[in-house]
Length: 185
Image (cartoon, rainbow, N blue to C red; front, side, top):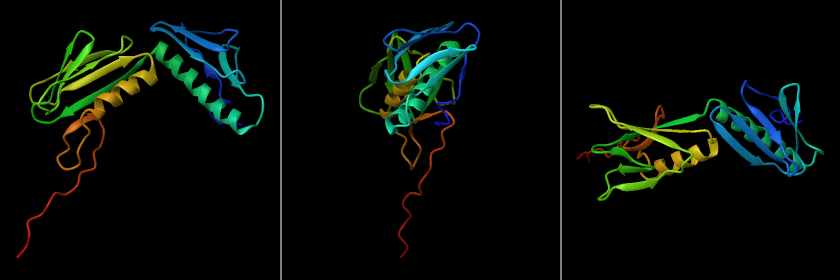
């Protein structure tokens, strides 16, 4: 049995889970509503205030989906209850981030500024303090979407290993390389 899939998901107070005839799971909570289509073979049921995900057989395909859908439903419940947050740090001279409506304007050392349209489900804030690197904070109830947006922002200027400049997650450790050394005669 899948070690992740067999675990029941405890429902926090204020969160409701419903499953319709097409096997679509809808989770409502204080922060919003999320839906996820679940494969027809995987059964999602409510038992004693917990959500339980079961599979019909021991086929490899069913085993793979069992833990996957349990994790997706758990992420939805956590998202509508507490939400998710990612913090990105812009390391480099002159790197800036400003928010204009629903788009993020980034100055990342290119000859032009980079504009990134944010989905309406993702809320962003940009903080620049004197003497510190600018920090972009992303908040959302959808874990997949916020991760995708954070990865997109990070891909605009990946961290280089020599000086450590680029966009990185707050607390991320960058492995640094030694640069060139002078030739000895």
